[in-house]
Structures are given as structure tokens and as C-alpha cells.
Length: 458
Image 1 (spheres, rainbow, N blue to C red):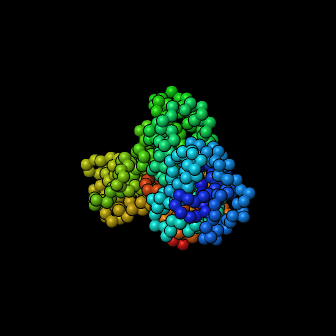
Image 2: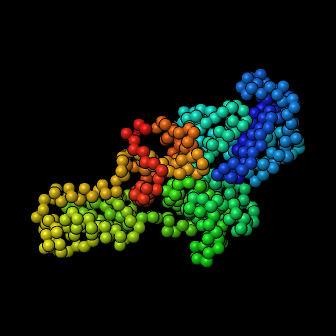
Image 3: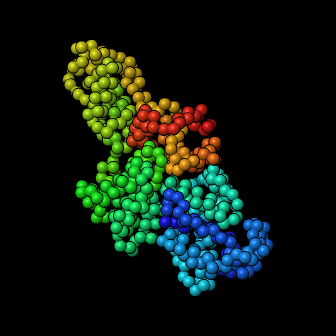
């Protein structure tokens, strides 16, 4: 859990400031679950420049509660939470100072969205809250008031959680808040999970991710892990300490996130997922006089025309291509023989195996196969369901390369390339991504496909 907050103060000498307004949003990593917003009577003068900046003056605070009157509520709403703030050192210090005046030691782990933004959102012109969120297409109102700034920080933090593909935020949360606790009962773990589409992360007591999975019903899938008797389920039951999750709305994004983050994090129990969803591929070897079609296990450094989950399907497709295009079996990886290939006698091969066909003519037919798995457009957006009402997801393809995914709200659609790129959670393109996206397009599992004029004009 996170306590995302913003504090306005009187200004003045270091550690002599008082709180004039506070807003705290309790957040479970998916949505706000509780909130507390209040003016606070600081019982001291407000600096003139602060009054001008925030619009808060002493007259407004005369009937406001004093800090000791709201202290209990602050403790309750921040229980078992990491404190999150934009420039967290300042807000956390002010809060600790106020509690110290009451003789109470308020101690929490904190996360600063300035530092996170600098790490996860590189090349932004400014990391000041107002300028940063506007550049990201995040609406902000009541600037320099606690509620407006805290809400903007909530939206910013949700975006940062998405972009944190290595899951350092989640891992630090589990380690900080749950490292010393006895393992929770399975029932409690299950009850806290949603029944919606997304990716889930199973942690051990040290906060390490031991398994990553995807499901259209996260709660049901994790329940199966915790009640199953398979070897994998028993390993999970032995190690599990905490479950985190990210809903995606879009099944395609869940699939893309799962394969990307398994490869990136290498969880111990994801043995098969560490490698490939589509382990077999067909590629063109251009190192020979007659270019060859090669069917093999997919390797990172090689480019494939198309990839498959099963070798027998890949072999069937390769046979089909050879027959339809009158290619030579001696110039592919299915069969090798001395002399003519077995289809040469039936005039189904034009003679590459006996060097009768011009290599340029043969290689031209092979080259035409290279575009079998091209996307329908070089540049496009694939729009899908969002995580909640009023939100949509998008997948961005630039120059036939998958760049990443993001979310946007309908009431502030992103219309410029800069804002779209700023909201993208970047991912490495690979043959698995292409196969997943093409499958989704073929089955029309999307809301809208928007062709783009080019890679920079929307």
C-alpha cells in the first residue's frame, strides 16, 4: 500500500514550519482506497510569499483543526504504507517534525516521484510537478494546493508503476512492509486480488519475484496456484509470501507485459517462460548462392519471417511455402540430398538443386516471403480497453517495430507525438511481441486501429 500525499506549509526557518493543508490518498497500486484532506491551523504566521503562492491565509485557518486533532487520522490512513510524494524529503520531514512536537516517532519508508521520474522518464524538460504532469498529458487543477498536487502525484505515480518494468518499486515495497512478517494465509491473499485481466507477481519473504503470470481473472489464477497439486503449484505454495498485480484491461497488453517481464526479471519458477512463447521460427539465410529457408529454434540475434509455438506447425507452413513458390527442398532445412531434390522430377522445383535456375530469380521468390509477417501499416496505434471506465489503452508501432504500450483517459486524449511517447511504457521488440500483436489484429481483438501518416505525425 502507498500513502500518496502533499503538504502545504507556512514557510519560514528550517524545522520551524507548520502544516497549513494536507492531502493523503491511500493507494493499493491500482486505485485510491481511502483519502484524507484537511486544512490545518499551524498556530503560527504564514510567510507572505507562501500566502501568495497557495492562496491560504491565516483567516482561512482560524476554525481549522490543529495538527494534534488530525494526527490519529494520519496514522490510520498511512498504516502499512510507503509514503509517496513529489520531493518526498520535504513532505516526509515536515510530517515527522509535526509528530515529533507531539512526542510521537512517525517513521515510514518513502518514495520520491522526482527521483523516480528522473530514472523512468528520461529527457523531460522539467521535473517540477506542474510542468512534468502537463507534459505527460496529466490534468492538474488547484496548483500549490494539497488536494490538487496530491491527485496529480497519484496519476504520475500510476504512470511510473507502469513504466517500472523491472518492478523495483514493488520489490522494495514488499521488502520494506512485509519482510519481517509471518506468511499470510492463502485466503487473505486471494481476497485482495481482482477478478480482472492483468499480470501478477508472486514474491517470497525477501521481496524477490519468484513467479510472473498473466490471466483474464487474476484472483482465479492465483487461487489455482495456491490450491493445485502440480510441481509448480507446490513450489509456489512453499515460497509465496505476497502477491502484487497490475491490471491491464487489454488482454494483449497483459500478454506483452508477461513475456517482457519474465525475460527481464527471470523468476525462479518461470522455467519455460524464461525463453520463448514462440520457440520455433523460419528465417532466410542469405549467406549462400541460393538463399535458404531455415527452420530452427529462435535465437535472439537472428531475424525471423514468422515464429511458431510448435515445430510441426512450422514445418507444415514451410512445406506449404516451398510448394506454392516452387522452391527447392535442397535449399531449405527440412531435407538435404545429393543431386536433384525429390520434387525436381515433378517440375515443382525449377532446378536450383542442380543449378539450372538463375540464383537471382530464385532469391527473388524467397525474398517475397520475408514480408509474410509484416504489420498492416508501418506506423499505427492499436487502441484497446483500459483498466477502468473512461480509459483506453494503446500499442504503438513505429517503422514496423513495436515500441511499447500506454493508457490515456478519454477526457484528455493525447494528440501530439510528444505526449504519446511520454506516456509509453517502452518494451523491447522481439518475435514474440510481433506474433502476439499480429494474432490480436487477425482476431480483431481491439477497439480501433489508427494508421499514422508517418512515425512522427499523428
